[in-house]
Length: 285
Ligand code: SF4
Ligand code: SF4
Image 1 (spheres, rainbow, N blue to C red):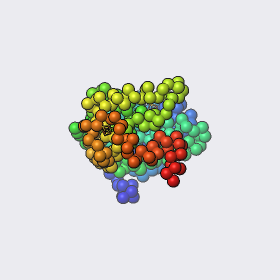
Image 2: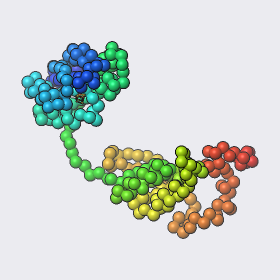
Image 3: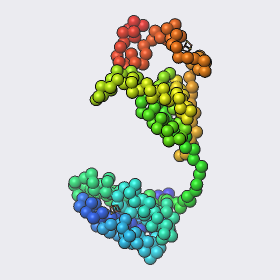
Image 4: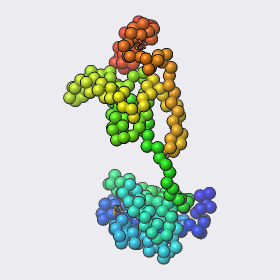
C-alpha cells in the first residue's frame, strides 16, 4: 500500500518549512531539511520561508497549489495547536480539501528542546519525512454536524472527581459520578490534615461530599465500576456495574447501626490498609 501511494502520480505534495524568525533556524538547519524533503517521493515542491503563518507565507502556499497543481500540503513549523487551522484554511481557500494537509512540529518538538544543531536537524528531517509519507495516504473528508450529548462521566469520586462534578453541575450540565468504593471522598477522607496549610481535611471535604448528594444534576454511582466504554466523542455509551448493597437506599438513613453487627466490619478497612494499620489483619491471620 505504501509503495502504491509512493508511485501514485496523482499525489502531488507541496512541502513548506518555516524559520519562525530564528526560533527554528537557530537550532535546525532549515535549508538542509528543505533539500532533503525535495528528494522524497511525490514531493513536487519544497520551500522555506521566514514566517509561514504570515499573510505572505500563506499566499506562498496558495499560489504554489494553483501554479504546481498540488493536492497535498505539509508545513513543517510549530505545534498544530498554534497554526493547523490557519494552514487548513489556506489550503481550502486555494481549492484543496482541508484534510489533505499535515503539519510537522519541528519547533516545540525539535528546535526548542535541543541544542545540538546536527541532531536537531536530523530529527527535523525525520518529523518532516514522516508527515510527507503520511499525507500521501490522507483522504478528503467532509465536515458534518452531529448532535452531542454534553453529559459528563467522571470516574473516581475523590476530591478531584467531586470538585470537577460540582463545577460541571454549576455550569448547568449533568454529571455521572462513578466511585468503586461504597463511599465517596477517596484518600482525602482518610487523612487528618492537608499539606501545606495543615487544614482539617474533613472540614474541606465533608461539605463538598454533602453538596454532591444535594445536586439533582449529579447522579452518583458509588460501590460501582465502569465495565465498558464504546462510541465516540460526544456520543459515548458506558456500562456501569453496580454492586449489590443489600440495603434499600431510599429507606437508609445512614445511621450506621448495621455496621456494628456486620461480619465484614471485622476485616480491615481501606483506611487501615492504606495507613498500614495491619493489627487487625494479623489478628485475622
Ligand atoms: S508558522 Fe509557527 S513556526 Fe512559523 S512563524 Fe508562525 S508561529 Fe512561528
Ligand atoms: S441500619 Fe442504618 S445505616 Fe444500616 S441500612 Fe439501616 S438505616 Fe441504613
